Image (tube, rainbow, N blue to C red; front, side, top):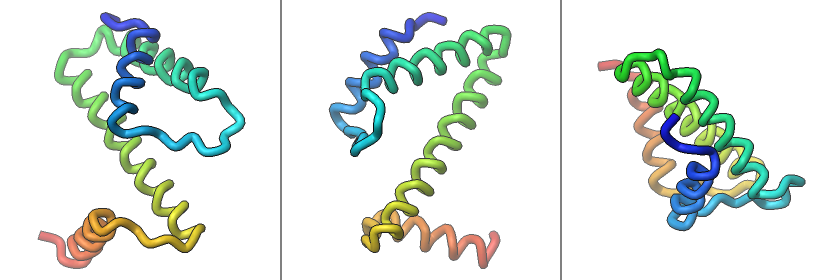
Length: 105
């Protein structure tokens, strides 16, 4: 791969400056978690070396979509567990999804 796990960790840190991750009270060191994820993603990318560019893009898009969905579900679960309201944008998105589910195009 054209990026090392260390370089990916640096990019992750740059992204987190704009959108920090709340690690709360996890019993893991943040840097170790970043290193683990960066190594895993670099290994995934290396495993896709034989893929066509289109297949690489589709695979990465599918992985990103899955992670965004998982993140949204976990956030909604946390909000519900603590009895907190969702943001207006999240509530609007879920309302739109519910409406689309009842009235397919």
